[in-house]
Length: 239
Length: 239
Image (cartoon, rainbow over all chains, first blue to last red; front, side, top):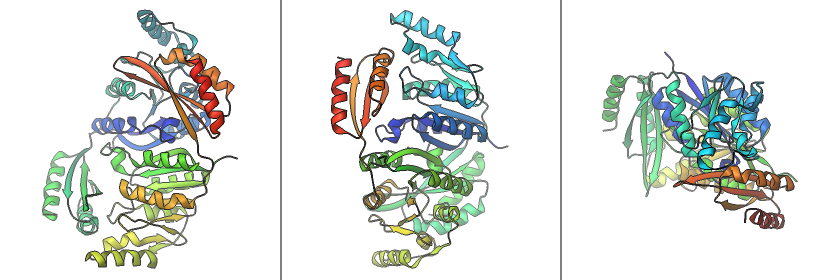
């Protein structure tokens, strides 16, 4: 059985300008691996409607799930919800259920639910809300696209809300052998090892630190027993 | 005058599996911003030939430059050079100039230039080598695609080699105003400010830390004087 696949779409000029180092991709990648959903592509695009719509269409057609991050706040540069609606030809406006969540939240905190904040209740028809225990303004799922906030603490809370509702596959397990030897010396025996284990994915990630060359050899697979046996063999190869 | 545009293609299962947190995207984004080359898209794909070839074709056709990271080492999972050649229908084999660099390096260090290491001299016809002062094995540029290593120290050295050879535009300048107020209160006046300055890009990046809500308001533009004047105005708006 093959696992469901996923793509991620990061929306944000702040990543592309080098202002902010991505954290959400790293978090989601780890969570999906544990859930048995294979993340096979990530795209980062700027706050540009045409670019967002094109990426949503391309990715939603080729993956089981698409997860987006960023652009659902109250400011003028938050255009993600409208772009998702446009990608699916869905009508979008302030929706009663989202508005009620925000109203209760701002009533409690004594803040005004002004027109800017109301933008966060713009939800496409047919979408399901994603719970946001951190700051209330919800994300949403429309068809196979799950739309979440860019602030890492909120993004992580939304991932925790949505992931348990999705059908995962077998978690991809991985084990690592650190070999302090040049990758050029490792490559031959490692390639032969990989050929002997077509059901496992075998990667070599070189490092150099303080003049020492080496590589982390990472073996990934879904069968824990086969992985253990292969790692024992690999340890022998590089003993 | 508009700046040249760039896309980045990160090749690596280690990012998609959540094993490694990206560093190269963050580095390149900052360098390109300083050079006046607008990074408008990043894609991360796995070590899969079809995915790499398709991404190279799509990105090289729509951007002035494409920068790739990863997959040019000596091991079986290093398939980037062959994929770049395939994307441009270029012939690829061990090339004399790259081989000579490696031979001199390994002669000096007393290591063998074995068949695995020779893979790093596989360079497509028509490509120009990119200098690698860290570990010698070169990157290369083929047409508008610049192919670099994934190890961050080597990637950064290659970026330093290639960037001065490219024609940049006007550096994108940015200034930030930190406002400790909910984004929902900021949004209205900020949107009006953005409308008054169509030549500037205005972004709001919310944060919440220890129960305090606020946003970093980032204004970007190429004219230092206009940027200074706009920031003075923005500071007044949120005084």
